[in-house]
Image (tube, rainbow, N blue to C red; front, side):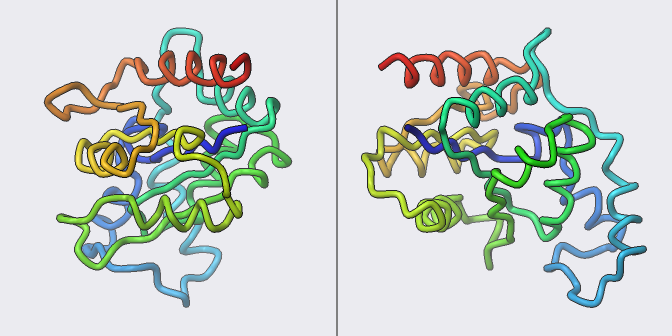
Length: 189
């Protein structure tokens, strides 16, 4: 079975949740451990209206359910200081069941130099979390940032870009169709 590592902002969510919250707080620094439940609710209220990317009738709910129901492992890897937003988004916006949301590993944190970093450290942490001992062709990366997809390709992972050749993010959900084809190929191969 495979491991699917999916970016969140502009890949699942059709917007940038981290930046939306950070602008509100006028910072891009990490989460404040003293945020109380009310502040976390305020953060959720800032982003809960960001719609998910879809491809016609094909939704992230269908795609993630297909992955998990076929025995694949799923992780969200995000440059975000607000990891608590992601499970809530998967539950309330995407519509996954609470049981399925618990199966999705969240690897969300900001690197020291986000402007020049890529997601390979996030990917390695996900692989360690799942105790992955398979081949890199069983690891599928889905991301809207060309920097991240290029770095993942350089490590010989399977990559489904959520962007065009110039690096512009898809907003039409083209990557969902490509992802579903990849899942089906892995299930039959």
